[in-house]
Image 1 (cartoon, rainbow, N blue to C red):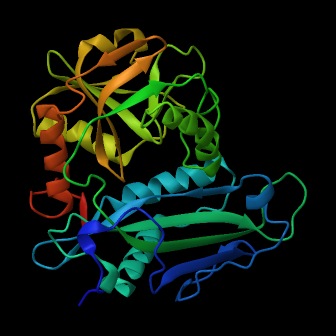
Image 2: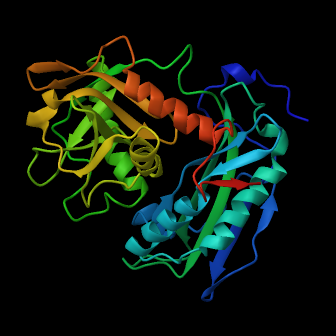
Length: 338
């Protein structure tokens, strides 16, 4: 039984579903948590999340398979990454096994909102944590809220995957030894202005260089970068100020083990982009967003094509999406059934 929605034409926007999970940390421990129909939070005006940015979040999806069951894709990786984000911001850590179980509870409670197989749509899940309580000094909170809500979202690409163009930004996404590797809201707030400026110039988004030397590619908007060299090496940046994308590390494994490509995680110098015959951005929302061209100051570099998706990029996309929806055998431990 599913809700009566136009599943094939969903966008990526907030939809209030039936239930969300919420748990509170107080006096040094987490409560048992509960499912609730209330999508509003009532918090103290002194909450550290409001004043000092003490908050973090995750993004993940649940997928309906052909046999009607529901897949989660590598949820323990999301739990682990949230743990690292919390530790970076001196927040209470929500236990990883309980994180995954809470995700499953939310999916089960909202099963009617999980899009049917074959529509290309999925159930997006947003776990988040905020520091709350009556605070005013610059210190970590004594109380926290951990919550997970869900909503159906459409396929990122309407009418098929298409390349888009990006521009190298003069702004920094994160500081050299800052919070770039944590999934915290401040990183995204910092990207809004450069993203708006890129779009005003008819680009999809901004590409950020490393904050220390401004010579190496780091992130593409809110996603990780990868390139395929002319001799078929899958290359992706490695840096302490890059968010470690679960999609990126999945593609790294698939490139090596399913496509038999050599792989390299290391420095990607902006001066060397002509070595790539294909390039893309990767993340939860799109899986892969092919990069057609990149504006670097006064030069515009085209990778494979501004209109066609490169063959290696297409194979990687089909392999990963096939695993997520249960059409292709997954590596051990990648899929959790709900």
